[in-house]
Image (cartoon, rainbow, N blue to C red):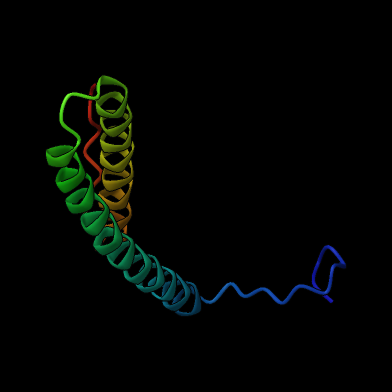
Length: 94
């Protein structure tokens, strides 16, 4: 049992903590990279759809909202990739 009595195994070994953080960073980097690839496909399909809709204003508004959502997701993905690479996170003022 640990000090609290929850049965959680903990360690104060700095090397174990560093290895754990490295594993988390690698996992986050891999997931973010895959997600970024998915976003690229979504953006490409959105652009092709935009070229085909013609004069439908409601469809154009919906595509614009979709594009904004993809952009926000890409920004989040960039932050996750920066974390996985241990890069400083530069705040973005919008």
